[in-house]
Image 1 (cartoon, rainbow, N blue to C red):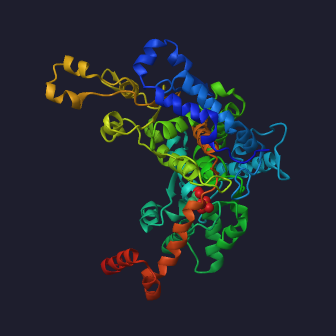
Image 2: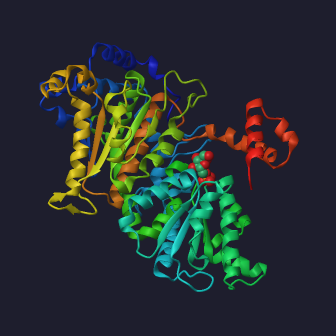
Image 3: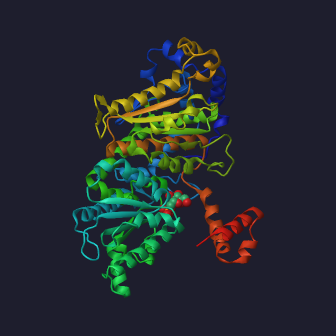
Length: 561
Ligand code: F6P
């Protein structure tokens, strides 16, 4: 059984880490020179991922103290409690079992939690998703006028959007030709309007993805899309003007994914066309559940199974690998070191892969909704800083935008660099191999950040003395390099699981519940209260604070249509 949180700041390891930090001047160049084994000793593998931690501001002593901190704060006991299905999401009294979604069929012994045969349920639901995916992909699933589906629009937000869209973009080379997925999330009506404007209702299928099926944005967008479908079919003269015909159209053009199948039925979607999952899957951990149905349609069951197998390989690594070699454990502890001992406020994630252009956005929900907490899971205030801000863009775009600050700014910005040895498109520019040029940038950046450029080196280039300081690079800026052979479905699953567990480790050290998200509720409630003020309810307008009231009046005065 897991116990209550241990205040990390009261542990001997925390005090030792503080003293160690105070006594250590970061010197990556010196550390590499003094220890020829450093790169090798601080590089690890997890499934297909090669992870080099050696350019972080740690010595072997730092790592061993961090591992002691993990021991003293019970991180691994909490990990085991998670895998066993204990209710470690205490504020919602739920198990946290996204790892069960990727257990292979026939895993033994079966996982039974709270009386539920989790494995059987997961495989049964996956079977339904795959049968649906196959039907759409083969053309067996037809629109209401008998036409083949060419476009799938996923309507969802947060975890019901970010995972599917990120993974779809990442795995585009695996998507079936002639079948395009699009994603609507924002309640800004522009999103639905722009996404549907060139689509044919007769060949478009909507997937309404919402864990709760109560999310304002998603239900509004689903209703807008349903109205668009009916209007489009009517305009084409293929929809009779009666409820039965409209219902039939919805049955052929709308499916749903949710844990609340009763609400799906109330919306008018046939429960036979609904795929379920369970309250022990957090929204931001759900891309590998039926929430990934759009992805399964795009890449097909075989690739989706490989995606799940990738997650599982890293789950097993996290669950069974010795702490000294356990990559998510080490990465999570490094983040704690960076945040709590080196003062990092943010963490950049920089994929050198255009296919991963939504990866940072996806990670923002995973990491910040999980660890943006200031009370522990026993309700007591945290005793130290928690969740850092995650952000990023694909390289090399970021190099020409914000890397200046990472290289020469006043703040420590730990950065993860992610790249793949084999490109999907091995293009050449004359004699130049473009992927090699791309990768040269990847290697150059972490090298520059680690080792910098001294004033002496700058002077040796003949630089005028007055601009020497501006051209000096301090170095000693921490980075992690993550390499994999290529961006396959399995490798993408591995990467996601790596970050899921890294996030878990940070939360476990800090003693917080990384699986609730109460911080998003107040704004949702206030939006519902404010909405009437925008449509003529003067009492609602008068009830606002002076700033909000003035902003609403500006909006009312300036809205043109
Ligand atoms: O508001 C935050 C949140 O609850 C996320 O945690 C979740 O992923 C998102 O909203 C969407 O929720 P749902 O899938 O229930 O529509």
